Image (tube, rainbow, N blue to C red):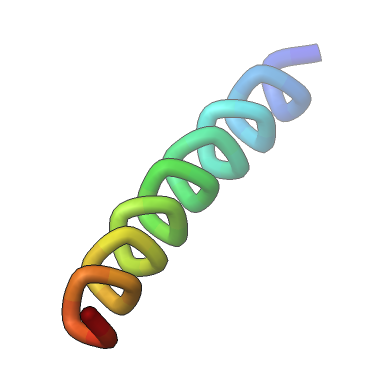
Amino acid sequence: MKYIVIVLAIIGALLLFFMAIGSTIKAEKK
């Protein structure tokens, strides 16, 4: 069960990371 928590934490971090990249790309396009 410990692996599930670790995987969820990694996925959450990646989602935040890609959201930050997406926001910066949108800002650069403007």
